[in-house]
Structure formats: C-alpha cells, structure tokens
Length: 370
Image (cartoon, rainbow, N blue to C red):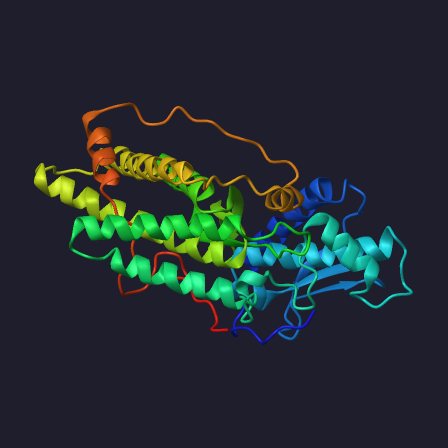
C-alpha cells in the first residue's frame, strides 16, 4: 500500500511499544467483530518505511504499519489501514487466494462485506485529496444552502431565522431526493480530539447531528501514539457533503456554547466554572428543541426524512457490536434552564473566520463547480 513520505523522526522506545500493544489490541477486536475470530495473530509491528502505509507479508506472517503513518495521521485513519491489511491476511490465509492481484475480486468482496476501504491508498475517502464528485444539481443546492447560512448572520433576527429555516428545508428536500442505491458512497470522519471523559453536552451534540443532519454517529475508542493516551472520539458516517456539514455544526455548537457560557457567567457575576457543564448541556438541549420545532413545520409541508437503511447498514458493517449507553444526565436546575433558553435562540450560520475546533475540518460545504 503506497503512501507519501511522512514526517521525519520516530517514536521513543516506550511509545513505540505502547503503540504496538494498542494496535494488537485493535487487531484482536477487529478479528472478533469483523472476521469472526478466523485469523491467527500475525507478527505485528511498525515499519520505518515512508513509502508504504502498511504491508501484509505472507512469507513471515508479518503485518506492518508505517511509523510515519501513526505519527502523522488520526488514529481512525491508522485503524482503517490496519483493517485493510487484515483483509489481505484474510484473503491469503483463510480464502487461500493467490491467483489474483493484491486488490482483486476476492479482496474487494471481503472489504465490501466488512465495510473496509478497499482503495490501494487504504485511506478513508474523507481524508483523500480527491473528494466524491458532486453532480451539477447537488452542487447548486449546496451553494444555495451556503448562501442561506451566510444570510443567517444578519443582525435582523427575523431575516436570520428565516434563512436558517430555508437552509434546513433545502437540506431535508435535498436528502429526500437522493436515490437510495447500492452504489451510494459513504465514508466517515472523526470530530474533535480524543477525550478521556465524554461529557453530557458532547453526547447531546452527537444526538443533534444524528437526528437532524443525515449522518449516523458513534463514540469510538482512540489512541494518541505521540502521548500514549487513550480516549474516545466522535465518529460520524454518511455521504461526503453531510460529513462536511456535520463537522461544521459540531464546531459551531461547541464554540457557541462556550461563548454563551462566558456571557452567562459575566452577567451573573459567577466566579467559578462549577456549573459550566450543566449550562453547556442546556444549550444543546435548547438548540435540539428549536430544530425539532422547525422539523414539525417541515413535516406539515410533506418533508419527512426516513432513516437511511443503507447508511445504517454501512455503520453496522463498520461496527458490528454497537452498544447503546444511556446516562441519567445533569439534574434540572436554573443553570440548565438558562442554557436551554440560550440554545433556543441560537441561529446556525457560517463559521467565523479562524481555525475550526475540529482539526482539518473544512469551514463549510465546498462542492466542486460542475
């Protein structure tokens, strides 16, 4: 699997060992969930080669990933390459196919069945420089939505609200009109940085994205090779334009909630951040309620989005053993109510200038011109 040369340098012996242990743990997880424990553990390690992302070497039963890959790419990308090489191992050791090219029909079939990226580059399409082509009608719709979100920056609250509602109507209509065919292309993206603790307001953001922005969401384990820290990160799956929109909404909500908390703190002359998480959760609940009310209005116009069965299938292929976790949430309080009230007044618009909170995330819908 070819790759561009990565950064120079290498992991310390301690971090190198920790990374290999984490990769082996992930290998066992994928072997159980995707390959039904059919594979035997390989000699797993890191390669100093910068020309290949990963390699399956049948003669020595070695599965190697590029050290520069684990140092320069998000962990989600590293795991995609690991699964890609495990698919090669499966084709060689379980199917016994040696009469085809490395990325031949047997390999393609295994990847399709298990939701693994089968491209020669081995990287998920959301991180490729070449985006999914956008046809003329879709591109025009996306540009129109972007213009509406620009209008939503208006100081006139009625004009801003009207622009946001029309953008939502087009998003709903646009996704309703996309045919559900087996040829549809899905990908994934990880939003934000890995966190040791996932607070309630972050889980509520995931709920908002999954309910209103045409993606599926799941919290997945992550690892930082440069620090050796484990954590969780939010994964969204869907079509490329919906991943773009979700990345923007994620950044918008986190930035706006923090801004609203600082305003609340200043207005009430609070001296600590003790109730910050409670307020942030309220903001997310308020914004969700606002979108739900607008959704009812769209339903009256006959625009009711039905869950995408093919997208759900794609998610299940990627994560066969999904577990739903329920939490009691923050208790009702005046601070939570204040956050909810602030969230109900939020108007979704284009991001402000500056670096977004999600590393590498685009600022907003960037379709190619037809």
